[in-house]
Amino acid sequence: MLPEIILGEFSLPTYGLMAVIGFLAAIFVATTLSNKCGMPKMDIVFAAIYCAVGVIIGAKLLYFITVLPNIIKHIELLSTSPTAVLLYAFSGFVFYGGLIGGAFGIWVYCKQFHLSISPLMNIMAVAVPLFHGFGRLGCLLGGCCYGKEYHGAFAVTFPDNTGIKGLAGVERFPTQLTEAIFNFVLFILIYIFVKKGKPRSGQALGIYLIAYPIERFLLEFMRGDSVRGFFGPFSTSQWISLMLLPLGLYLTFRKEKVDEAVDVDTLDD
Image (cartoon, rainbow, N blue to C red):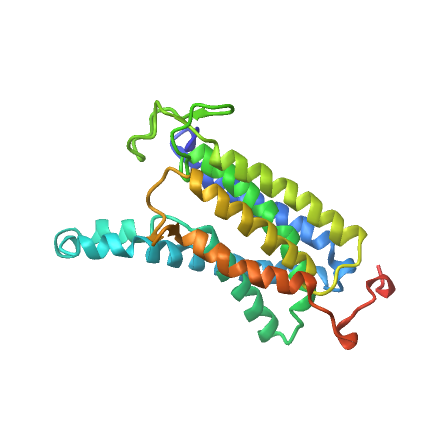
């Protein structure tokens, strides 16, 4: 675990570094699919900027929702330590909030400039798991999103981290690394599918919304961090996974209308 890199008098958070690397890598890969999906490269870049804003807002907002019950439980702290409460309320990110916020940002961009969102749906399916894979490496380095105590194969042990109490000295299931590997593999498979095949509008996104929610739902049972929000037997992310899965099935298997089909092979390189 390496929460930060010290450069003289400055420190560089590794989670933020991995997020930036993942974002830049995702944009680069997305632009390589511009001709295949019939979307100019500059529109992809600008849509990604809108997406990034939506990701930050959405991820912070959903994190706030997950910790809101704890804030309400200790509401008296608002009068004695308001700054500490605000820092706690918006100190983290929740991936699904970022996913929804990012999709909304892309929709806003397309709406503002009168563009069809359909070509961006398959591009998004390629870019998201690549970005997320780097993000989970950032989680591994930072120590967040850690797994339950676990003494089997591939168990990981984190060094002392003053920011996360009780994390150090316990063998844990490698949830961050597991999800990073899954996302990178999913990125490769979807990229090949979009690059070499002829996916229908939104079909690649549908495949992503089937594969990732299933993986996330199962992996949540191995998470050891408690600040995730629970409603009944499942975590917030598990409930969202269950809601996204039908959308993934619809996008993957729906029949495309004739006037929606685009022969991408006729597009100019």
